Amino acid sequence: MADLPKGNKKLLNAWAFYDWANSVYTLTIVSAVFPIFYEALFSDRSHYITVFGFSLKNSALISFVTAVAFLLVAFLSPLLSGIADYVGNKKAFMKFFCYLGALSCMGLYWFDLDNIYVGLVFYFFGLIGYWGSLVFYNSYLPDIAFVEQQDKISAKGYSMGYIGSVILLVINLAMIMKPKLFNITGTDGEAAMKAMRYSFVMVGVWWILFSQYSYYFLPKGNKNKNQKVTHHVIFNGFKELKKVWSILKANLVLKRYLGSFFVSSMAVQTAMLVATYFGAQEIAWSSKEESTIGLIICILLIQLVAIIGALVTSKASEKFGNIPTLIFINGFWVLICVGAFFISQPLEFYVMATIVGFVMGGIQSLSRSTYSKLLPETEDTASFFSFYDVAEKIGIVIGMLVYGIIDQTTGSPRFGIASLAVFFVIAVVLLNRVPKKGVLN
Image 1 (cartoon, rainbow, N blue to C red):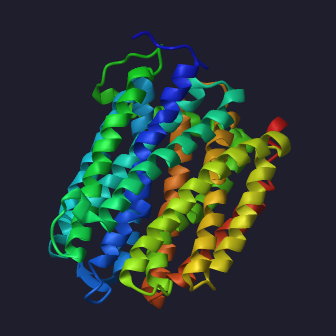
Image 2 (cartoon, rainbow, N blue to C red; image 1 turned 60 degrees about the vertical axis):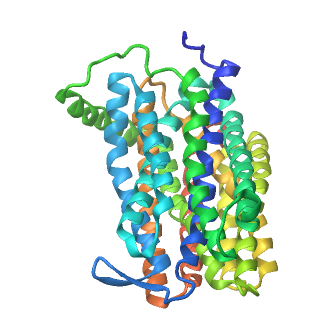
């Protein structure tokens, strides 16, 4: 079909709908079911396992694998996004990473400690696929939406993602709690674990199926570029990145904003990635069953409240400006990290989950749309967004390594979570140094 014009409602909705498709990965695999499943594998043994010749704590192992995956994405994304802009087919790249991530999720069905390396490979490529696809997904935002539309449609995307992922998680929760209703056989524990494995397959199917709506309406890429893929394209990708870097160095507002976003990402994404492992190990649940149900309920709370958080933050940015709103949210995260150090009871964890959900939805949505607003006029949006994604990924690498080292050294994630407050403090300081620029301040 012919490309829809920029700002078209159907095009905007199709772009936002990809959040509906892919957010089941972050909820089920990153935040809820897989961390509980992974923790359950160690329920009758030590939390330490020997891999790669080292004795590693299970949560530290996942932190290190996650950090390596993000390091690879950080290396690949600027190269691939530069190529995508040059040849004008960012949608093809987005599809490749989408399918890589979805199929890797399905592969987690076979994850177990006897074949830990195979399982870690699927987990690793699931991360690569999800975050790789986001490089190209995010880069579509300035292409399909006008500046005045970007905060709203960015928030809508996150909101749709939260709603879609909650729907699938509720189905998965029902399967885990009442496996016999779904003809899942075995003892209660075996059936619950089998239900979790089925949920990984469902994530992959959901992701591939619903992404087709977005692919149908999203344009192939830049209309003015239709170059063939040759060995010269790789070097052109680097040339494009060099050009973007020169622009960034001369753009004080964008450069300083990226610096603050880099530090903030160290803490935000790390907190999100390790929250369930923290809850499983540090909260005094009365039983294994209460732990499983309680953790999933907390994740559901985060997702539902995040919808409100994204929408409220969008309204707040209209009234107070993007930068002041981001300063407030980062400051609030400092209090959350410090408070998390002291909680130990389920009720406290529920309250903390509610608060985290509100600020999580806000900071993700507003960070993306703020960067989009600050971009100069350009057709090479994928190359510019690759810098945004590289900043985020390198930030996550540092955050996960810091967390993993502290967790491995102390044997408790409590100190790792508290240390993230330092990053948020630095982010607030850096945001205050961003020069004032119109509605953003």
